Image (cartoon, rainbow, N blue to C red; front, side):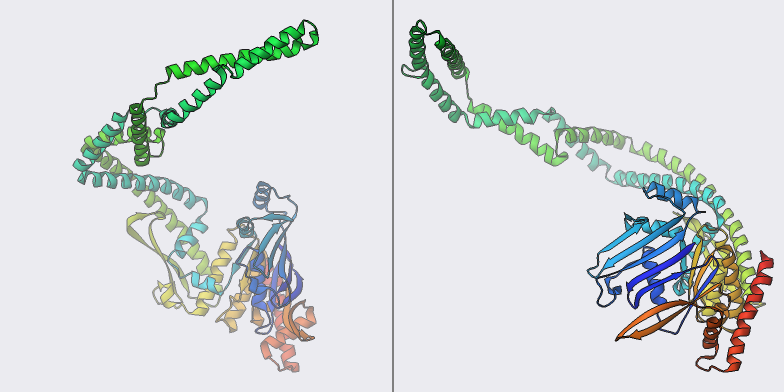
Length: 565
């Protein structure tokens, strides 16, 4: 349940905060006062698109915060825990947007991605605006409504159908691919055979290219290597080279050690250096004697690498990928040889699966028809209460020739407002006012099947007046007995039923205009109802009429509606 809404620097809402009650909360005000802006702000904190254009002139950013009581919402509490958000009896949703367009959302002080905020919001609020009436005319609206109303019965049938449908689509696509292959069988066999022979002829070995690249570098630089080794060998082996000089140094130190033993360590170091360098000289000599840099071998290495790289480029980028491609191609080659048998086998499997899918689709249709009948009876009962005593609401079913992801049902809303008139497609026969009442009737039914505790009606009363407005007011009041309702209205009949009446108006001060909210007491409510009924005519008769309207609404709420409980 929404406890409070705080809006700061959002368009004309400089700093507006309002608290709500569990039942029926109504917003009224002059046209242009900012009622739609308030709904926009509420939508932003619930995750709707947030534009920097909403930032109040002169401000750096706006923010909106909504506080909800979630003490009875175990599903939402579990989701918050999954997201690492501390669970309390209240949840604080906040959205801030800077004038540069940067947006930040948080839940209980924890910054969250926008999709998490939206997921949380769907468990808290259902907003029904004027455009929602038109949504009833969309092609998928009947299916979505019936499936939502049908609960576990339809969900189970649909889950079984979806599983079979996924298998059906995959098998059908495989069959189509095989039939396409069949048309090119000879060409594909030649291609696969050639590819297999090409790869097998190369006799690839994993890691071979690494050793070949190393060998290639040596062969390509053989002259430089021999020259450098010869130079190093000469510097060690010649008469006046390092080894000869070290031998002389060693001999001199041996004479000196006889007189000063402290030089023995240095003698050992020189002797060790001579031994190390002499070993190096011998190894260099052996390297030179066994080195046979063959130019023909260099060509062979490069040709082998070219073959490996060409296959990599053609079949997968690595030796491992090429060998995997080889195995896959062998399988396709063998399958293609037995293509006719494979096609026949899959056609048989598809025929069997089609029967199973047909049975599942028929079961889904039967359950949908059962639930649609229940739904339509409830909606029809409610539209009778909305000044359409002879109205009939129905869902028509037609069986599609093909399977779809949603079943084989073409479903359409049907409606008749008058006795003796046959039902016809809703979009062809329902007026704007009738559409509003049907939408309200549906919301009334669905409120009892859903878990969303707060419902927002944004001028759902479009095209409605007189007795119908009174009936609509009573119906919204009924909904507020089940869950919290927020309603923006221009009808006094609806406003009179409010448990909390919030007045929205523009105020100007020091050259600036701001929209402000005020919770009305009984006297202020009477005067607002008087404005809504009589306009600027503030007569005693208008005042008494408004007071009687409020008194009558209170009487209905606490007698007729309470009895319905």
